[in-house]
Image (cartoon, rainbow, N blue to C red; front, side):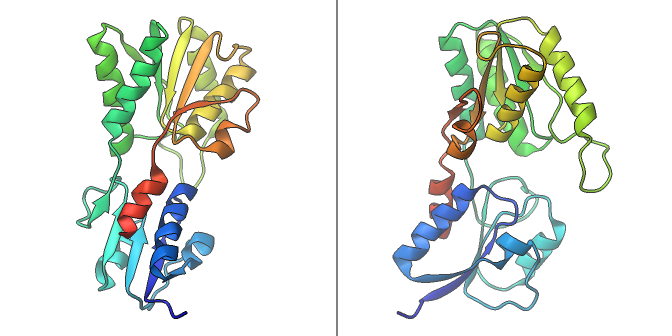
Length: 239
């Protein structure tokens, strides 16, 4: 059966939930998906098709390509609000509020936020979390970001960040409730707690975002997570 549309997936560093959502829509509507960029991360200069589903992230070269390609493009996320493209995005402040309410229901009194980096999405999740806690007169400590600033090239000073993280986790009052930007960050918090001989969840309770079963169920301590419907976001982007 001939495909009706040929669509490029410009999703070079996106969550696999995005792939599933676009793939489900593609099956239902007989699309042919061009998936080269998932494997190579290289921009297919000269490509011709009917449309693009993208996750630009911080790639200026990809943004330039998408703005010049001359076909419909839909971006998944809100990382690059400076780029004028139709987009589907999650309610990040709501995600933060849900995380705070999860911990408040369990009567925690000490809280920390574990960011990935300093960007719009991290900021909104933090605001939702911290503002909800502030309504109950609680404050929120900010842990070192997973992506430390000031590191040259495509590397991260993992040793420096781990030392800073363990220092904060050890000195903050317990029991401590930590909200991570996503499940990857939250899993790293659990690992740092194990290195610091801090019991999870007895001394440090950790909550992630995305409910990624690959991560949540494959840790020595199972991870609780705020369910973020990435597959549904991608399906709507395709629609």
